[in-house]
Length: 443
Image 1 (cartoon, helix red, strand yellow):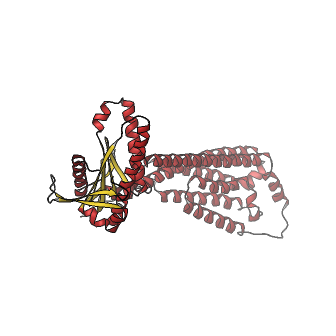
Image 2 (cartoon, rainbow, N blue to C red):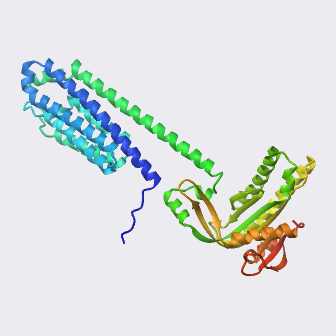
Image 3 (cartoon, rainbow, N blue to C red):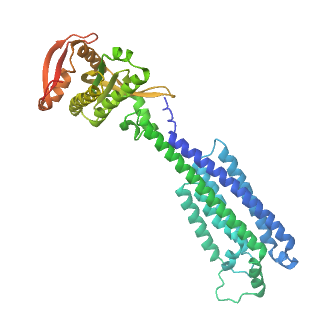
């Protein structure tokens, strides 16, 4: 069975859209410039003396043909860019066709037998060379710019060497034509071309500025997104990484539940505003301590906080992080309770449950909304231990797996008191439980 073709990432689609818009804009510029040049050449045909027209009619007619083809090229590039068939390589092909037209125009300018190719760059239409180069700033594709520049410069060099007449006397007619090249009409064409070039640079600056503002907005959005998702998940959350997260990954992590005791009764005696302020302070306190020790806050459930450790590190280090976070949460709660007592508010009590085990870490949801979370036995065990801690009045309870992972760290940081094995609803085997105490006093 053939493998399904992978859809391009959002960043790839965004760049492709930008390329298409650039090519459409370039097509408009080509049509505008060629239209103005076509009318200018027609105007010159009506002003030239008959003798000059007869000598230069091949070049003049060639200029009309080239400008017409240049307009057609602009129209084609605009239509292709606006269609769904546009590809980056299409822009390269169109750019190379543009180079061919410009070089053809220069070639026809030096067809007169008495005119050296060294004088080819005197024509105001040679500013088309600069136009082609400047148009590349609208593409943001270095490969296309290098290819176009190299082909254009090499082509001009070869044309200049095509009929070099260094040291020869310049015929009077050629001098007269060179003087005409810098008369008012050709200089008007030069001024027009310079105006177009300045306009293109202005458009390029405007587009670059818009892109910078969009990037700044995306960075601002990413910064705000970090307030809802862990930093480890948002720093490089491109489409490929997102697909990996949606597929999920089985890991052994340490899950922690923090729950406020007596919150329901307390909230009934408080106004909605005071309740919201209390929850905000409480959640902020827990979040600071958890993130300070490398943990990730998974979700808030009323007065409960679910977090986990070990997404990017081994389970042993994760257990130590969870242990230190639990101790610091209690320390911070003690300080907060001192402030509340001084202000005449009642003290708050919390229960912390810690369990280790396998989970599935994944981004769960549909295309409109995703939630990164962990699900599995460790989460269920931690939730049941949290209920046990509230029922028995324990402040910090952890399971046997966390105890085994901690090893000596538990005894250097605090004291673990065995609570025996307990049968819990939904658990296939009795769970060994331990209560954590600080070395400087029970928590």
